[in-house]
Image (cartoon, rainbow, N blue to C red):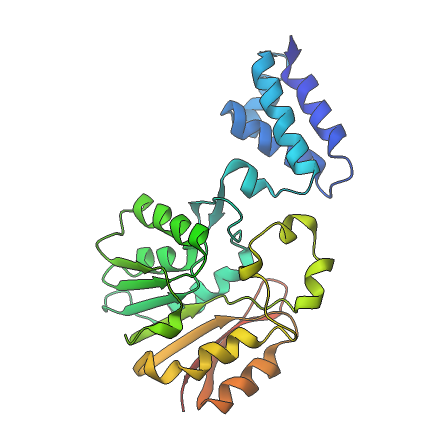
Amino acid sequence: MYTIRKVLECGIDLLKDKPTPLQDALLLLSDLIKLDQLEIMSYKDNNIEPSVVYQYMKMIHRRKNGVSIAHIIGRKEFWGRDFSIQGNTLVPRDDSETIIELFLELSNKTRRYKLADFGTGSGCLLVTALLERRNSYGCGYEIDMNAYNNTLVNVNRYNLSKRCNMYYKSWVYNDMKFDFLLSNPPYICRDDIKNLQMEVRNESRLALDGGINGCIMYRRLFSGIRQHLLSGGTCIVEIGDKMYYDVIRIATEYGLSLYRYKKDLTGVIRCLAFRIS
């Protein structure tokens, strides 16, 4: 029999080439044996069944081979809530919370809004926006079947099916209009994808590949924005590092004006809000 201490030490050693081996090994063990990290330290001399050790080693080797923690345990926290992560769905990042921050600043808690999320991924943006604005109604559009199903899981998890419709199709092919359009489009330059960390490269290519210069999906989105925004409506998009001027230039070509922007925790401008000029 192995003790919790011994198994954890083995996991840390196998992950020694990762940036945070102790944190990763603890998170995986905590998820598997359903003890929080403080409890693990308290019970470190307790024995673990061989079958559990086997499962833990499988998780450790997946992490060692570049699979993200979120994909191994099947969930990721976003805006203080757990979201199911299935298959190779894009893992929600803290940076994307700037979209929610800006949305909440520009909206009113008591008003009823029509919201849309173009390219839902896990559904974290759409679900969070609807939970924070409980009088509102939303639509999500996704062309990746795995991500589409992943969003449905999270919509149902938070009992939003009566206030949210999902469509397995591109946002281009709809004639509805909304007060707010939210989107975290793919914005990684195609040639840069090969240089990303392995755990990121394992995520959906559709959610990463922004074309040659990273801007192709912004152009596609902005080109049809007038048919999707209600009068006074706002489009909020996440952008990559150093994309500020390029995205504004494209938006201007299609008759949009920058209304607000939001910086992430590192001080980088991470999302932009546009309105029709």
